[in-house]
Length: 316
Image (cartoon, rainbow, N blue to C red; front, side, top):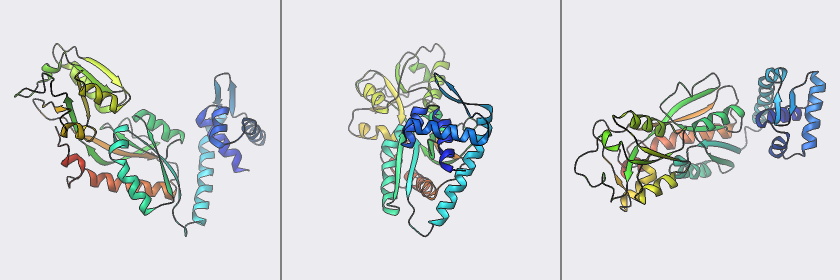
């Protein structure tokens, strides 16, 4: 069987669109159609229902998808074994929260370029659910998740491991009433404030909003953004407060554009950073090297030995 047909099949299954599959494979849409028809004729079963909204896997298609992926993984392993004597090379797609993409990962990519110059890393800023879906669909090779809840992330398909921790900082402009007080702010003091948090699906933002709304008489105004810069800029402009990883506000704290809000009671817990990958999908040598670099460099950055988490932005 021509493995090109299987590649087209798995790509169409992931994208759900002949147009998107053709773009991903750099083929004409008519070629994708011919590949799928040839595979269906060879196997003797329809693999997709062609609908106006896209291509949906049939029951037979769903049963065969995992088998097709295993065949392609086996072919990839065979090709990798044939080239093991050469340098590690390839493209690795990593899903990651925007805050890590902007603060932690540039140093990791720089180190990788020195160690493995033929490995290209493609970073995709994405939230937890988008990263998990990307791993399941095959659009991502690896993902970094900022969440303490492993029940939602661990599954038969996805495996995760802790690699670092990120401190959080609750901040506001220097002129904010809560920023200039001598005493720590109680949760009740936050009840009527305006907050700029990252979009729903950001685990620590969701947990913070839940805790805010649980306070007696709480009625906070919450605006959600998909951008760290947008939330930080609104707080710096004096419009309200924001909760962000300390690394993303370190420069603003140093130059006085933002000030920390100290909370009464236990400090805000650091957020675990977890490396996620698909359990069943074979990892190419390039992906394995990127995973090793992420584990090593992220752990070093947050181990208290002068990394930015400790030097520039101590925990709340």
